[in-house]
Length: 293
Image (cartoon, rainbow, N blue to C red; front, top):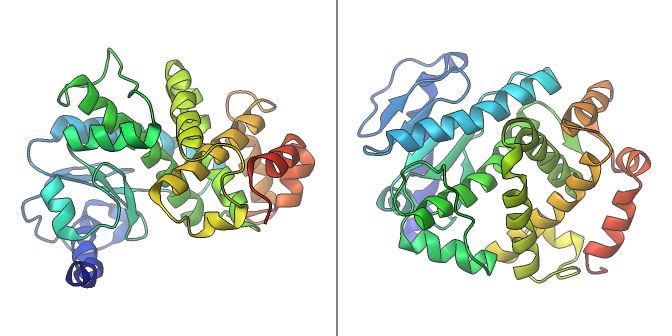
């Protein structure tokens, strides 16, 4: 285990270095692609393991919607670099997250699973504490449950991508919980704009993560900085989604547009006091969803 962690920074950095030439903004010379294949894109270039082209196209479309919307709402330059890896490649690179759970890396980089399998199914069933939300129109990515395990992971990847965009765009909260809520406001806005039919599934996923992770008051807000487990980290994602839903209830179809517009006026700074003044429901959320310090 120590040897794997020692290799992790150099291996992951090497993997993402392969992606840099695929994006014109990076200004790097072409580099060898090794065994990874390339799906070019101005907003979301993808390097993918052989056999996962359909998956790469699906991921590029989903994350491309987020990047385009974020650019429109924030007026900030945005891009994302994605790696789709097999289980063996993931483990060989030494990523800390379990296979099936996306992991941000390399600044604009986001590593994701190329394939669903029986282990990703069991992973997400355990984290949700319930069935996986299968869909009739899911791409042919294995069994319905394996495809569903990828879809749940992709929802978390949307949140991770939103965080990457906010950070790269210079939008920061004055308290850690503000950054989490902002990422979910962006994610929820994208789902509302491009996949309205999936809203019940999205709500079910984050509700299940919050319930199975311990329910209301399971952790103090301070634990969000370094959650003690994957289940705890996803519990916080459930809480942030609840807060984003409260904001969305008063802002229409694109709550991120209004919130980012105000943040631009403040130089990218998002103040907790301003959010609480504009959305007083967040005060109740803070007082009831987290264990007292």
